Image 1 (cartoon, helix red, strand yellow):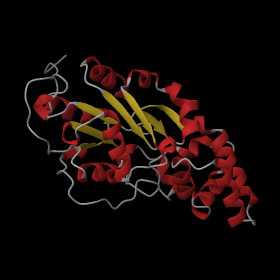
Image 2 (image 1 turned 90 degrees about the vertical axis):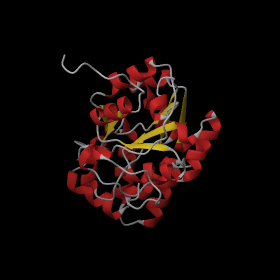
Image 3 (image 1 turned 45 degrees about the vertical axis):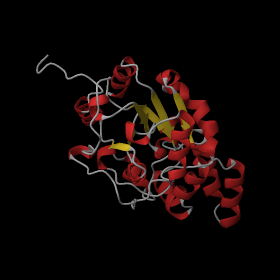
Image 4 (image 1 turned 180 degrees about the vertical axis):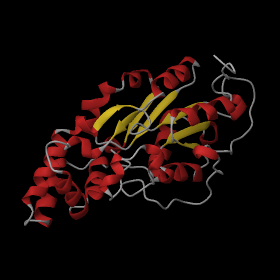
Length: 265
């Protein structure tokens, strides 16, 4: 799953303090991105007409999963099983970012482990750490992102289609999707490991749009990686760089997707 940085401490920071890194979330992104406003809110978007969401030109939403719907901290999988110092040495020396990206692209895990062993025969402990991470991957998913379950329910109630586009290894996605039962109510899900494509590659956005018959200028894509939202925006997709449920709600209300709330409870 991504996003991830070569800095192992990155995975322990809250989303609002993270900067995008490699493994599908490199810090550089294409130009031509819609102008960002406070809290990562996109200020660009076509005006529209009368259906729900039409005020902001939104006919459908595509959501990321990790650190948007459900929190992911890679280190949590090995916490209490591997020392923090050993984990951080492994992340830097074995390039966990690259290993994770290969997994998110759908490469066979045993091949990834074999390549690591061949590249670092002097460090059999690194293959042990990688196997521990994989075996205990479910523990890396530390809980729902605050406020998002209610927000997703409200959006689903509008009747507009909701999709998920996630950088995630196929088998681990299947083994952990039960943690987000709302996924069963989504109109479609694209998993990078099953497509052998990964964000921010424009090809995975193109595949998603074509598979579900979506018009890019009428779709709002929500992801916590600026590189991913930049790539989507360069294709004409409306974007929101996720920092929290509050800022996302504000944009959805401003676009007319969700109704405004009472000034006071």
